[in-house]
Image (cartoon, rainbow, N blue to C red; front, side, top):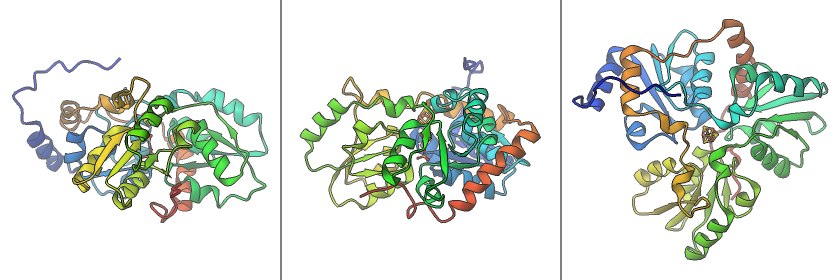
Length: 329
Ligand code: 13P
Ligand code: SF4
């Protein structure tokens, strides 16, 4: 369980304090599109999983304050071991990571010795160390198209992303049965009702969505791909089937357009807020920069082993964001 904040921080101007500490610590604040708007607004960089990995690998800051979930902060540590990496709430996990314990994944791999392991970045460092190549949703298409069609593949932990890639590329990857609880919660019935109310609005969906949502999408892609689609589609209203905090960036860039979060079963999009991402708050970010805790620490052998599959991703994905995305218009 997340420890409660015991100090009274109510008198502090958190934004100003975070700015002060960022300079004092020579820290960079990286935030995923699913973070609360107030965190996105003060971050040095807001991006998708691939972009954030690249920023973490390239930064010359001494401290990375990672406003995202644990596997993302671990990725930053793997790529930048000499940096202090803090995560405002160490309980910010991911249902996909939880679905894939390393011991079980190891047995899955061992049962298929003629397969390579192509693995979604939403997994633990130990699972990365057991994998051949990591992918993000914005790099998966470019990477899979570089793998010969006769090469057998196991894909984990997201069965929906894997299934989407199988359908799109005519592959038969063996899929680990994990899902993202956030994208799993969209309701087809409610989406169809919303489409009836907005017949001209296209639907943009993340490939972590199940097929019954993807089937109604005009565009499928990563968070940055969806954002690019939002900036380029010709209409005035877009239905967004991914975590709704990304809508903040759309509204900043296109205040004249309307963005509607795809609904969950109760007809409300709030059930699609990622509960893990939501654990990070301004208060916890302030404390993380002040105390340089909670900090990502990692066994060096594990780090080196996990880095191989991440490095392969960065090499194979180079130049992919946007052009090599999973997008289909
Ligand atoms: P991307 O930002 O790579 O699209 O990933 C979405 C996600 O679910 C992160 O956990
Ligand atoms: Fe994990 Fe889904 Fe949250 Fe992304 S949105 S961090 S995949 S639970």
